[in-house]
Image (cartoon, rainbow, N blue to C red):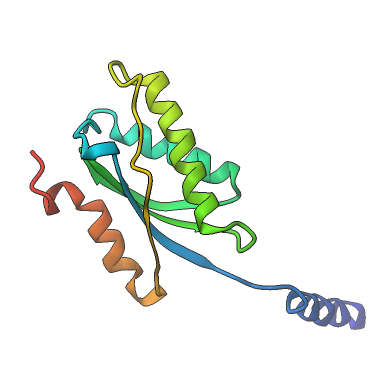
Length: 141
């Protein structure tokens, strides 16, 4: 019993000997020149690719959405990975995926920049609905 209590307190102390960080960031970027080429038929596969890339980077895509010319991602990732690095890797690897898997987009590129906004936990549900409802928000048919 005493060993269990000691282990509990040791684990508790150890937990606070390292940083505990939960980063949630709303990422947004568009296609180069805002070309409307992100078709609804294959967008879910693209969102799956974003999740695969995020997982390789020790992150997670909480939700994704978008329309023909831009995407929104709500992501979590480790504190030792800069937002700029995470966004760049998502953009680079997803553009490779698009060029390889989507007919007619072998010269696809994302815009150079991106938006990144931290998200308070109290706003998560509202933001998730906003991201998931991008087609309706933009009146995309």
